[in-house]
Amino acid sequence: MLAGAASVTAEGGDGYPRYSLEAAVAGSPEVIILASHSHGQGPMAREKWERFTALPAVKSGRIYTVSGDLLHRYGPRVVDGLEQLARLIHPERP
Figure 1 (cartoon, rainbow, N blue to C red):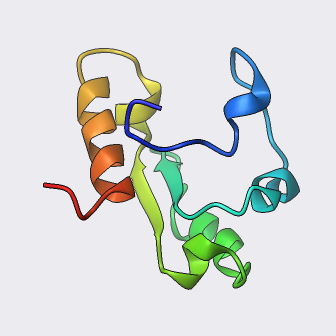
Figure 2 (figure 1 turned 90 degrees about the vertical axis):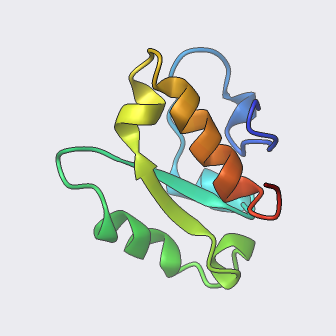
């Protein structure tokens, strides 16, 4: 991945594969990044993940929400989205 991480969904093939919550949990993510959209995806999406207290991302408090406009609408702003991802995944880097 360009932001310097490996996605638990990377083996899903091309296009827009769908994953069950169980499959994502099985990947034991260290960071969870949720894309918010104008139709209100936010606290409820976080709550769905926070109940999995054994996940490394939940234990370390690394569940983040970013703007879906930056990540899902391809154009010049996708670079802003990648930079935001990189900062969330690697907060120790400048």
